[in-house]
Image (cartoon, rainbow, N blue to C red; front, side):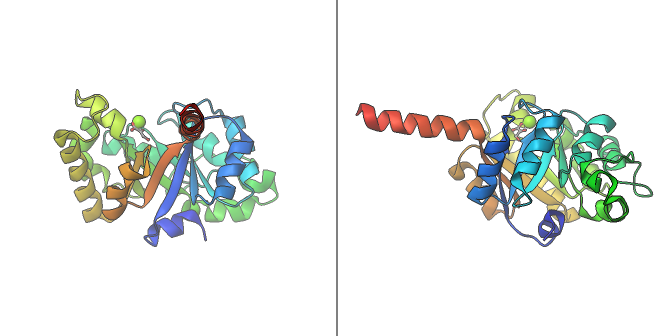
Length: 248
Ligand code: 3PY
Ligand code: MG
């Protein structure tokens, strides 16, 4: 089933973050059984060509959502044109910024997404079907990861076309002068405010953590877009575990 439909059907969707431009890693993570992959063009090394190759490598076994580098028409258009099933837009701090995301991500009349002939459209072979269904099938996620966004959350969740808010605990804690303290009471209170607003508006919730223990409370609270670990964190923890066992 399409990823957006699964999200709207209240399914728990377990993903992981990819930061390295490797089709093989994307293929392996898809084979490992993740429901979706969070492809990071904001901080990771990925460019749009890498994203296209990585999405191709997953061979439809998992959904791929691209986190764009910033809230811009060019970034969002290209991410969707390479065939991502959705976009995640960092640092959305106001309803106006959320409306811009929807404008860039949805075709007319809902938005003003630019119309091209690219991989998403089967390079033109699948043009009519794609443009007819894209607005229904594209997942639109905004990140709330600044205290300014938390303060505007009641307005942001009312913007039509936003499917989910994804909390960025690291940026959020930094914006509150509590760098990296993702469990500080003030940070947890800010997250609770986002959660309450999203739930009352019927908007889905997402969260990122490096370890299962970090995300499990959020799963229990009904967050559905869970991103656990990154390609590099898996490599680092696997390498460290081998070395620590051999050096004992
Ligand atoms: C953050 O914690 O700031 C994130 O963006 C995680 O995805
Ligand atoms: Mg962030």
